[in-house]
Length: 494
Image 1 (cartoon, rainbow, N blue to C red):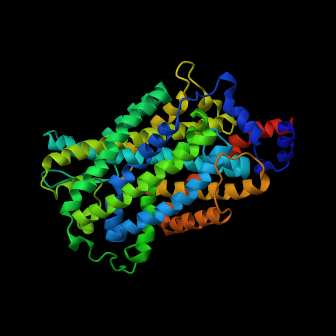
Image 2 (image 1 turned 180 degrees about the vertical axis):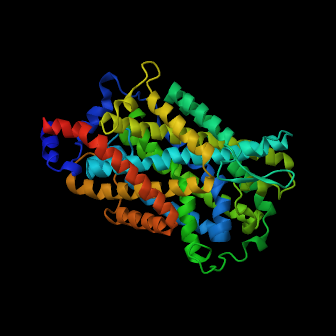
Image 3 (image 1 turned 45 degrees about the vertical axis):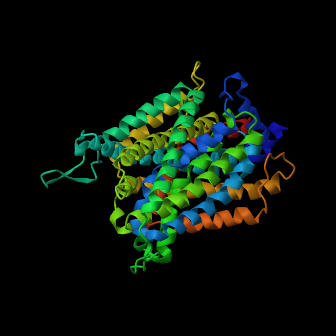
């Protein structure tokens, strides 16, 4: 049956799909695959660990200052709607196809190898570039905390070469490298190589700390909110699309969308989950629901504590906001919690990235190097090593705003393809067992596509240009290597 399916899709060339029964065989791994150790609460923890991070603690202030003002609360709600629609589609496909690879794997089963390659390559923007984005903000908060303790790090070792640093004497110099960002990415990658069970335990502990920090900011900050900071709630547009007004709210939704990317990283763990048909939906939608409530409350308090214009270019707005309260001890405590929270975000994103490349290498669209499993740790350690270097270079040498926008547009494209995949699978595999069924198909998937597309279109031209260039590099690799070495293509030819 599997051989017949492969032969049927061979004629499709670029559009050949990978049969679901073959995907399930790959999930078993023949004794050489990944180990199933994660339960439902571990999945929810992974989701929250990835979701609450730089998008909330850093990009909230930037989006409010540059795009939406206090109405960034509406931007978070719009982004949450797009995520909820996409999350339901992710849940259905993850329950059908419990294999590492996330949107890449789903696209391979529904829309063919070419689209699968595009989305797999695109996911690098979401996971690896996302981890690099968080590392830059992590570095900022670490420097802030150390400064509170009387330790000042050299400014040139906290910024990329593309940023200008103002020194204590008033002179300006260019940064050299964001050294703390490089170091944390290397440490997390080494932990991930050690094993997913150990990584999940560390994540679970830090998630508790991170949620407590968000609740502390909301609970304490609520008593020091100044009503005048909400006026005007929707600042007048400056005449430029994306600078305040409703276009600014939509632009901010595309920017803070980065804050929600963690829930889909849960789907990359499908091959390491106990009873994935039942627990994937809990992990994806459960973590998304919890974080949406926290996000809207947090954004409302943050913009009430600090006038939005004062947060322009501030990568650590939470520390700035806490200074508006009479509790100096709270600032250090919150900063410490934020640092811990960022750590879990990077952990889950780098985890997801290595699993996507593991799946692509298993399909021989990438060299076998990325599919190697460590004989003792049972992890794709070579993928972890590769992305340790890749993400560290980005985090050390690239400004946060550039990284954040690249991550958002890559994620939105992945969500659109997943939503389309549900509609296609309902037509091509209507009787296939599903642990979770997306309601109101095709209305929900189509709505997800439209909301995500609207947020993509609201992003600036430079971000789109970077996406096109990145995809162009990916296409060169696919036609130069992946298409000729594709395992599905070779089996079909035989």
